[in-house]
Image (cartoon, rainbow, N blue to C red):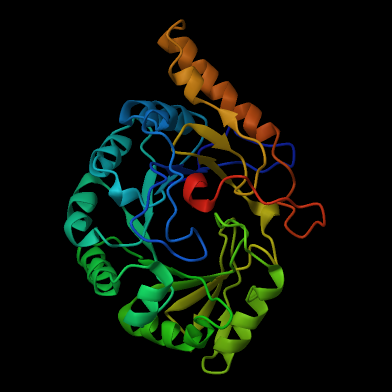
Length: 338
């Protein structure tokens, strides 16, 4: 993309925002235990979800304000039937951003090549185990082989570097830290371990049960020679070369070592709410502006730009998870977008 364009979305802590996570659905075809209960059905009403045209208008205005990276998320974004169209149209914008996508990979076998042809550059895949039976227990779906096939399809389509995100849970899959990294290195996956965060629909997260970044690093160091990569920038993962490289492993310490001071991300929920932090208690409604019939298109665009600006200016210095007064967001991760 060349040199960074100047971002107009600068908060009161001088953080310039260039990354927008766009949730295109809250629905998912898995039921990961740390995200939602197996019988979860509290989905957003269909008429609340933004249409393709509405999504594109918000994204276009965001690019005019300096947003350069779009990450499509869910729920599971690939359950939305028009996901390829969304990618194609985002890439056709005058200030075309880089576009990536976070997925569980279940539909990548059929969609990886069409998405790549539409302009998608890479994918992040969520995978917490290499054991088929454990996968079924964790997700309530017997789809492990489909995930692996989807990852392979993404690699063939050139959606790389392919990042695999794993959440280690105490007494559940914490014995797989080393096997996951060994498998990732052998198969060209960029593995990233993510600390479990208080974003589950059932509200059962307990900090004492969370496996911290320090514990993950200790587990991995028993088997691998890990050396910290010196430059990180605004990336959420602290990267380490594995056995001298070139492969790396990342650890995202959202809870134990927050990286809020370098955060350059905003979020748009599937129902049209701007969030300036994953853990924000407040949202900025853009859907009402999108659907206001009394204003001109020029006024609509101007209002959307001002809504982004006001959300950014209200951004707090950090997410506050480690503050005793922290309250978990009302929305679960599936409704916020990753």
